[in-house]
Length: 175
Image: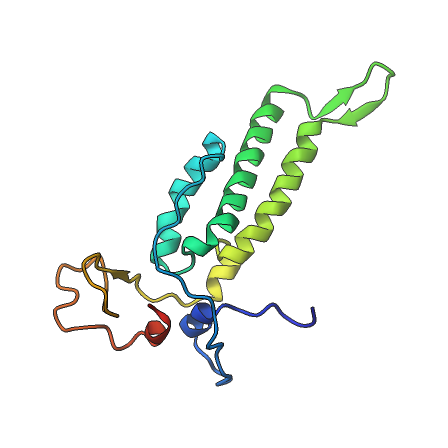
């Protein structure tokens, strides 16, 4: 693949389109709902999932289609946390019966999980650098009883009194 990775249409619209390039009209769209936590995640990964899933959904970054990516990040986080706990109990360098000294296997596991986490952090917009590239608008949420295109700011008790938000350029891409 040549050049930069293409950005999802939703992120392009949030950031703005200074080059006035055409947006992808065939971008994948799904019913907006918070992804459910997979049962196979370890306890630390489940805690990380619960910490992030709803917040990322309200920001419009993840939806149900992104469940696997968020699960992979959460599992890498859980394994990294486990490796760090084990490293507290064991030395970083281990002397083998043959007399050689080698790094603890937990050090390698922890480092590999950190590498995986860094990749997913960039993809999901969780790092400070990736967040500076996104100019997020207030989170919008569909009322459960509405089937139209009206989105409201869940923080305001007066949201929706004046009708749908006309300022959201991503409105045409939402179901």
